[in-house]
Length: 385
Image (cartoon, rainbow, N blue to C red):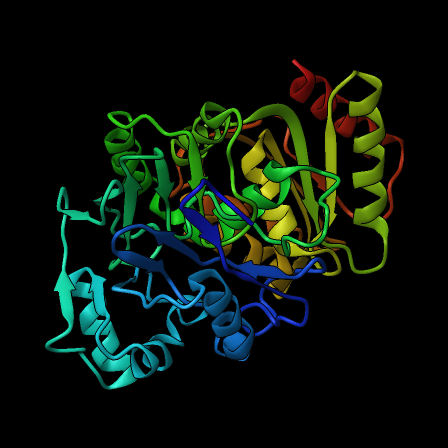
Protein backbone atom coordinates (compact mmCIF):
# COMPACT_ATOMS: atom_id res chain seq x y z
CA UNK A 1 0.00 0.00 0.00
CA UNK A 2 1.24 3.46 -0.87
CA UNK A 3 0.95 6.24 1.68
CA UNK A 4 2.49 8.65 -0.83
CA UNK A 5 4.83 8.36 -3.81
CA UNK A 6 7.77 7.67 -1.50
CA UNK A 7 6.15 6.20 1.63
CA UNK A 8 5.04 2.54 1.58
CA UNK A 9 3.15 0.41 4.08
CA UNK A 10 4.87 -2.89 4.96
CA UNK A 11 2.89 -4.02 8.03
CA UNK A 12 1.20 -7.34 8.83
CA UNK A 13 -2.09 -8.62 10.25
CA UNK A 14 -2.44 -10.95 13.24
CA UNK A 15 -5.60 -13.08 13.52
CA UNK A 16 -4.46 -15.34 16.38
CA UNK A 17 -3.40 -12.74 18.95
CA UNK A 18 -3.96 -13.33 22.67
CA UNK A 19 -3.87 -9.67 23.65
CA UNK A 20 -1.95 -9.15 26.90
CA UNK A 21 -2.60 -12.77 27.92
CA UNK A 22 -6.30 -12.48 27.24
CA UNK A 23 -6.90 -9.13 28.91
CA UNK A 24 -8.54 -7.74 25.78
CA UNK A 25 -10.90 -9.58 23.46
CA UNK A 26 -9.90 -8.86 19.85
CA UNK A 27 -12.21 -10.88 17.59
CA UNK A 28 -11.00 -9.02 14.51
CA UNK A 29 -7.32 -9.48 15.32
CA UNK A 30 -4.67 -6.77 15.30
CA UNK A 31 -2.41 -5.06 12.80
CA UNK A 32 1.26 -4.34 13.39
CA UNK A 33 2.08 -1.42 11.16
CA UNK A 34 5.44 -0.60 9.65
CA UNK A 35 6.46 1.84 6.95
CA UNK A 36 9.39 2.68 4.69
CA UNK A 37 10.37 6.04 3.19
CA UNK A 38 12.22 5.66 -0.13
CA UNK A 39 14.34 8.76 -0.73
CA UNK A 40 18.04 9.49 -1.28
CA UNK A 41 18.34 7.83 2.11
CA UNK A 42 15.93 5.06 3.06
CA UNK A 43 14.26 4.96 6.47
CA UNK A 44 12.33 1.96 7.78
CA UNK A 45 9.86 2.92 10.49
CA UNK A 46 9.47 0.20 13.14
CA UNK A 47 9.40 -3.58 12.87
CA UNK A 48 6.58 -5.96 13.87
CA UNK A 49 5.86 -8.89 16.17
CA UNK A 50 8.39 -11.73 16.13
CA UNK A 51 5.82 -14.26 14.89
CA UNK A 52 5.64 -12.34 11.61
CA UNK A 53 9.37 -11.94 10.97
CA UNK A 54 9.44 -13.76 7.63
CA UNK A 55 6.37 -11.98 6.29
CA UNK A 56 7.66 -8.58 7.35
CA UNK A 57 11.15 -9.07 5.94
CA UNK A 58 9.56 -10.19 2.68
CA UNK A 59 7.35 -7.08 2.62
CA UNK A 60 10.42 -4.95 3.25
CA UNK A 61 12.43 -6.63 0.49
CA UNK A 62 9.65 -6.01 -2.01
CA UNK A 63 9.43 -2.34 -1.04
CA UNK A 64 13.21 -1.88 -1.20
CA UNK A 65 13.38 -3.41 -4.70
CA UNK A 66 17.08 -4.13 -4.38
CA UNK A 67 18.06 -1.06 -2.38
CA UNK A 68 19.50 -1.08 1.15
CA UNK A 69 18.00 0.86 4.09
CA UNK A 70 20.04 3.54 5.83
CA UNK A 71 17.98 3.94 9.00
CA UNK A 72 15.60 2.04 11.27
CA UNK A 73 13.40 4.44 13.24
CA UNK A 74 12.15 2.93 16.51
CA UNK A 75 9.18 4.92 17.77
CA UNK A 76 8.07 2.49 20.47
CA UNK A 77 9.72 -0.46 22.20
CA UNK A 78 6.73 -2.70 22.89
CA UNK A 79 7.73 -6.13 21.51
CA UNK A 80 5.01 -6.14 18.84
CA UNK A 81 6.97 -3.29 17.22
CA UNK A 82 10.56 -3.93 18.25
CA UNK A 83 11.19 -7.68 18.39
CA UNK A 84 12.77 -7.88 14.93
CA UNK A 85 15.31 -5.08 15.44
CA UNK A 86 18.19 -7.57 15.76
CA UNK A 87 17.11 -9.51 12.67
CA UNK A 88 16.97 -6.23 10.76
CA UNK A 89 20.41 -5.08 11.90
CA UNK A 90 21.90 -8.53 11.25
CA UNK A 91 20.67 -8.34 7.66
CA UNK A 92 21.42 -4.63 7.12
CA UNK A 93 24.48 -4.22 9.34
CA UNK A 94 25.32 -0.70 8.14
CA UNK A 95 21.89 0.70 8.93
CA UNK A 96 21.70 3.22 11.78
CA UNK A 97 19.10 2.63 14.51
CA UNK A 98 17.34 5.88 15.46
CA UNK A 99 15.47 6.13 18.77
CA UNK A 100 15.16 8.03 22.03
CA UNK A 101 17.73 7.45 24.77
CA UNK A 102 15.08 5.73 26.86
CA UNK A 103 14.37 3.37 23.96
CA UNK A 104 18.04 2.45 23.64
CA UNK A 105 18.12 1.66 27.37
CA UNK A 106 15.16 -0.66 26.83
CA UNK A 107 16.88 -2.32 23.85
CA UNK A 108 19.80 -3.14 26.11
CA UNK A 109 17.51 -4.61 28.76
CA UNK A 110 15.23 -6.48 26.36
CA UNK A 111 17.59 -7.63 23.63
CA UNK A 112 21.05 -7.28 25.17
CA UNK A 113 22.32 -4.76 22.61
CA UNK A 114 22.68 -0.99 22.33
CA UNK A 115 23.65 -0.95 18.62
CA UNK A 116 26.85 1.05 19.04
CA UNK A 117 28.33 2.44 16.87
CA UNK A 118 25.31 2.40 14.51
CA UNK A 119 22.94 4.29 16.74
CA UNK A 120 21.50 7.79 16.69
CA UNK A 121 19.81 9.22 19.77
CA UNK A 122 17.12 11.77 18.95
CA UNK A 123 15.05 14.09 21.10
CA UNK A 124 12.39 16.78 20.78
CA UNK A 125 12.83 18.91 17.64
CA UNK A 126 15.73 16.93 16.13
CA UNK A 127 15.55 16.41 12.38
CA UNK A 128 16.73 13.60 10.12
CA UNK A 129 17.14 14.57 6.44
CA UNK A 130 16.56 11.80 3.92
CA UNK A 131 16.57 13.88 0.71
CA UNK A 132 13.40 15.74 -0.10
CA UNK A 133 11.89 14.16 3.01
CA UNK A 134 12.94 15.28 6.49
CA UNK A 135 11.71 13.68 9.69
CA UNK A 136 11.21 15.94 12.71
CA UNK A 137 10.96 14.14 16.04
CA UNK A 138 8.35 14.75 18.73
CA UNK A 139 8.84 13.27 22.17
CA UNK A 140 5.68 11.61 23.49
CA UNK A 141 6.54 10.09 26.88
CA UNK A 142 3.86 7.84 28.40
CA UNK A 143 1.75 7.75 25.26
CA UNK A 144 1.74 5.03 26.30
CA UNK A 145 5.31 3.94 27.28
CA UNK A 146 7.94 6.41 28.58
CA UNK A 147 10.37 6.03 25.65
CA UNK A 148 7.90 6.89 22.88
CA UNK A 149 8.75 9.32 20.12
CA UNK A 150 6.71 10.34 17.11
CA UNK A 151 8.08 11.61 13.82
CA UNK A 152 6.68 14.06 11.30
CA UNK A 153 7.53 13.96 7.62
CA UNK A 154 7.83 17.61 6.65
CA UNK A 155 7.49 16.84 2.93
CA UNK A 156 4.28 14.82 2.75
CA UNK A 157 2.99 16.09 6.10
CA UNK A 158 2.65 12.60 7.57
CA UNK A 159 2.65 12.01 11.32
CA UNK A 160 4.08 8.66 12.41
CA UNK A 161 2.30 8.55 15.76
CA UNK A 162 3.56 5.34 17.43
CA UNK A 163 0.59 3.67 19.21
CA UNK A 164 -1.41 6.91 19.42
CA UNK A 165 -4.48 6.96 17.14
CA UNK A 166 -4.32 3.16 16.93
CA UNK A 167 -7.20 0.74 17.26
CA UNK A 168 -7.98 -2.92 17.77
CA UNK A 169 -8.58 -4.90 14.58
CA UNK A 170 -6.58 -6.22 11.65
CA UNK A 171 -6.43 -4.04 8.55
CA UNK A 172 -7.67 -6.78 6.22
CA UNK A 173 -11.05 -6.94 7.98
CA UNK A 174 -13.54 -4.16 7.39
CA UNK A 175 -14.84 -2.67 10.64
CA UNK A 176 -18.56 -1.90 10.18
CA UNK A 177 -18.53 0.31 13.28
CA UNK A 178 -15.81 2.56 11.88
CA UNK A 179 -12.61 3.74 13.49
CA UNK A 180 -13.92 5.35 16.66
CA UNK A 181 -15.47 2.34 18.44
CA UNK A 182 -12.39 0.13 18.65
CA UNK A 183 -10.06 3.14 18.83
CA UNK A 184 -11.96 4.31 21.92
CA UNK A 185 -11.73 0.89 23.59
CA UNK A 186 -8.04 0.77 22.69
CA UNK A 187 -7.39 4.29 24.00
CA UNK A 188 -9.08 3.90 27.40
CA UNK A 189 -7.67 0.43 27.91
CA UNK A 190 -4.08 1.23 27.03
CA UNK A 191 -3.48 5.00 26.96
CA UNK A 192 -6.32 6.31 29.12
CA UNK A 193 -4.39 6.77 32.35
CA UNK A 194 -2.05 9.25 30.68
CA UNK A 195 -4.45 12.02 29.68
CA UNK A 196 -2.07 14.79 30.75
CA UNK A 197 0.69 13.31 28.59
CA UNK A 198 -1.65 13.05 25.62
CA UNK A 199 -2.67 16.67 26.09
CA UNK A 200 0.99 17.71 26.10
CA UNK A 201 1.57 15.96 22.77
CA UNK A 202 -1.59 17.36 21.22
CA UNK A 203 -0.37 20.87 22.03
CA UNK A 204 2.85 20.13 20.15
CA UNK A 205 0.93 18.76 17.17
CA UNK A 206 -1.07 22.00 16.84
CA UNK A 207 1.96 23.57 15.18
CA UNK A 208 2.06 20.89 12.46
CA UNK A 209 0.04 20.65 9.26
CA UNK A 210 -0.97 16.98 9.25
CA UNK A 211 -2.46 15.36 6.15
CA UNK A 212 -2.00 11.73 7.20
CA UNK A 213 -1.62 9.84 10.49
CA UNK A 214 0.28 6.54 10.38
CA UNK A 215 -0.20 4.71 13.66
CA UNK A 216 1.41 1.43 14.65
CA UNK A 217 -2.03 -0.21 14.86
CA UNK A 218 -5.09 0.14 12.67
CA UNK A 219 -5.74 1.94 9.39
CA UNK A 220 -3.83 4.83 7.89
CA UNK A 221 -5.87 7.96 8.61
CA UNK A 222 -5.91 10.40 5.73
CA UNK A 223 -9.28 12.10 5.79
CA UNK A 224 -10.86 14.49 8.31
CA UNK A 225 -7.74 14.54 10.50
CA UNK A 226 -9.36 17.08 12.83
CA UNK A 227 -11.99 14.45 13.74
CA UNK A 228 -9.40 11.98 15.05
CA UNK A 229 -7.40 14.64 16.86
CA UNK A 230 -10.62 16.09 18.28
CA UNK A 231 -11.65 12.74 19.77
CA UNK A 232 -8.20 12.30 21.31
CA UNK A 233 -8.56 15.77 22.80
CA UNK A 234 -11.97 14.87 24.30
CA UNK A 235 -10.78 11.51 25.60
CA UNK A 236 -7.58 12.86 27.14
CA UNK A 237 -9.50 15.62 28.94
CA UNK A 238 -11.78 12.91 30.39
CA UNK A 239 -14.80 14.70 29.00
CA UNK A 240 -17.93 12.70 28.09
CA UNK A 241 -18.19 12.10 24.39
CA UNK A 242 -21.98 11.65 24.35
CA UNK A 243 -25.04 11.94 26.56
CA UNK A 244 -26.35 8.67 27.93
CA UNK A 245 -26.31 6.20 30.81
CA UNK A 246 -23.97 3.25 31.10
CA UNK A 247 -25.32 0.62 33.52
CA UNK A 248 -22.73 -1.84 34.80
CA UNK A 249 -23.95 -4.55 37.14
CA UNK A 250 -23.40 -7.91 38.80
CA UNK A 251 -26.21 -10.24 39.85
CA UNK A 252 -26.12 -13.55 41.69
CA UNK A 253 -29.66 -14.95 41.48
CA UNK A 254 -31.14 -12.57 38.92
CA UNK A 255 -32.85 -10.06 41.24
CA UNK A 256 -30.32 -7.28 40.68
CA UNK A 257 -30.41 -8.01 36.96
CA UNK A 258 -34.19 -7.61 36.98
CA UNK A 259 -33.80 -4.23 38.68
CA UNK A 260 -31.27 -3.15 36.05
CA UNK A 261 -33.52 -4.23 33.19
CA UNK A 262 -36.42 -2.32 34.74
CA UNK A 263 -34.28 0.81 35.06
CA UNK A 264 -33.05 0.40 31.50
CA UNK A 265 -36.63 0.24 30.21
CA UNK A 266 -37.68 3.33 32.18
CA UNK A 267 -34.71 5.34 30.92
CA UNK A 268 -35.32 4.32 27.31
CA UNK A 269 -38.97 5.31 27.68
CA UNK A 270 -37.68 8.79 28.54
CA UNK A 271 -35.52 8.90 25.42
CA UNK A 272 -32.21 8.28 27.19
CA UNK A 273 -29.47 6.31 25.42
CA UNK A 274 -28.61 3.31 27.62
CA UNK A 275 -25.85 0.70 27.44
CA UNK A 276 -25.94 -2.28 29.85
CA UNK A 277 -23.07 -4.58 30.85
CA UNK A 278 -23.03 -7.72 33.00
CA UNK A 279 -19.55 -7.39 34.50
CA UNK A 280 -19.31 -11.12 35.20
CA UNK A 281 -20.02 -12.13 31.60
CA UNK A 282 -19.52 -9.23 29.20
CA UNK A 283 -16.18 -7.85 28.04
CA UNK A 284 -15.11 -5.54 30.87
CA UNK A 285 -13.04 -3.46 28.43
CA UNK A 286 -16.28 -2.68 26.56
CA UNK A 287 -17.85 -1.60 29.85
CA UNK A 288 -14.89 0.67 30.58
CA UNK A 289 -15.20 2.17 27.11
CA UNK A 290 -18.90 2.83 27.65
CA UNK A 291 -18.32 4.41 31.06
CA UNK A 292 -15.87 6.87 29.53
CA UNK A 293 -17.97 7.56 26.43
CA UNK A 294 -21.21 8.47 28.23
CA UNK A 295 -21.81 11.17 30.83
CA UNK A 296 -23.74 9.12 33.42
CA UNK A 297 -22.95 5.79 35.08
CA UNK A 298 -25.07 3.42 37.17
CA UNK A 299 -23.30 0.79 39.26
CA UNK A 300 -25.57 -2.00 40.51
CA UNK A 301 -24.34 -4.94 42.56
CA UNK A 302 -25.12 -7.41 45.29
CA UNK A 303 -23.66 -7.23 48.76
CA UNK A 304 -20.92 -9.84 49.10
CA UNK A 305 -18.87 -10.57 52.21
CA UNK A 306 -19.94 -7.24 53.70
CA UNK A 307 -18.88 -5.34 50.58
CA UNK A 308 -19.51 -5.60 46.85
CA UNK A 309 -19.39 -8.50 44.41
CA UNK A 310 -15.79 -9.11 43.20
CA UNK A 311 -16.42 -8.27 39.53
CA UNK A 312 -17.77 -4.87 40.57
CA UNK A 313 -14.74 -4.22 42.75
CA UNK A 314 -12.47 -5.09 39.83
CA UNK A 315 -14.44 -2.75 37.57
CA UNK A 316 -14.20 0.19 39.99
CA UNK A 317 -10.50 -0.46 40.51
CA UNK A 318 -10.02 -0.43 36.73
CA UNK A 319 -11.88 2.88 36.46
CA UNK A 320 -9.54 4.28 39.10
CA UNK A 321 -6.46 3.00 37.25
CA UNK A 322 -7.61 4.88 34.16
CA UNK A 323 -8.36 8.17 35.95
CA UNK A 324 -12.14 8.01 35.55
CA UNK A 325 -13.57 11.44 36.40
CA UNK A 326 -16.04 14.20 35.58
CA UNK A 327 -19.20 12.05 35.60
CA UNK A 328 -22.46 11.57 37.52
CA UNK A 329 -22.75 8.17 39.21
CA UNK A 330 -25.79 6.43 40.69
CA UNK A 331 -25.58 3.39 42.97
CA UNK A 332 -27.94 0.43 43.27
CA UNK A 333 -27.39 -2.32 45.83
CA UNK A 334 -29.11 -5.57 46.71
CA UNK A 335 -28.69 -7.31 50.05
CA UNK A 336 -31.22 -9.62 51.60
CA UNK A 337 -30.32 -9.06 55.26
CA UNK A 338 -27.48 -6.54 55.35
CA UNK A 339 -27.05 -4.40 52.24
CA UNK A 340 -23.58 -2.84 52.32
CA UNK A 341 -22.60 -2.60 48.63
CA UNK A 342 -23.51 1.07 48.14
CA UNK A 343 -21.40 2.09 51.12
CA UNK A 344 -18.45 0.05 49.83
CA UNK A 345 -18.78 1.42 46.29
CA UNK A 346 -19.08 5.00 47.45
CA UNK A 347 -16.03 4.68 49.68
CA UNK A 348 -13.95 3.74 46.64
CA UNK A 349 -15.51 6.32 44.33
CA UNK A 350 -15.15 9.30 46.69
CA UNK A 351 -11.47 9.49 45.78
CA UNK A 352 -12.29 10.03 42.10
CA UNK A 353 -11.98 13.54 40.66
CA UNK A 354 -15.11 15.60 39.88
CA UNK A 355 -17.63 12.85 40.56
CA UNK A 356 -21.22 13.80 41.39
CA UNK A 357 -23.40 11.20 43.11
CA UNK A 358 -27.08 10.85 42.32
CA UNK A 359 -29.52 11.72 45.08
CA UNK A 360 -31.74 8.70 44.44
CA UNK A 361 -29.42 5.82 45.16
CA UNK A 362 -31.40 2.60 45.56
CA UNK A 363 -31.34 -0.21 48.10
CA UNK A 364 -33.17 -3.47 47.34
CA UNK A 365 -33.61 -6.38 49.71
CA UNK A 366 -34.30 -9.40 47.56
CA UNK A 367 -36.76 -9.50 44.65
CA UNK A 368 -38.06 -6.53 42.72
CA UNK A 369 -41.45 -5.28 43.95
CA UNK A 370 -43.58 -2.14 43.69
CA UNK A 371 -41.67 -0.36 46.45
CA UNK A 372 -38.34 -0.90 44.74
CA UNK A 373 -39.81 -0.06 41.33
CA UNK A 374 -40.89 3.30 42.72
CA UNK A 375 -37.32 3.96 43.88
CA UNK A 376 -35.98 3.01 40.45
CA UNK A 377 -38.59 5.28 38.85
CA UNK A 378 -37.28 8.19 40.93
CA UNK A 379 -33.71 7.35 39.89
CA UNK A 380 -34.75 7.19 36.23
CA UNK A 381 -36.43 10.62 36.55
CA UNK A 382 -33.24 12.08 38.05
CA UNK A 383 -30.91 10.55 35.47
CA UNK A 384 -33.14 11.65 32.60
CA UNK A 385 -32.94 15.32 33.55
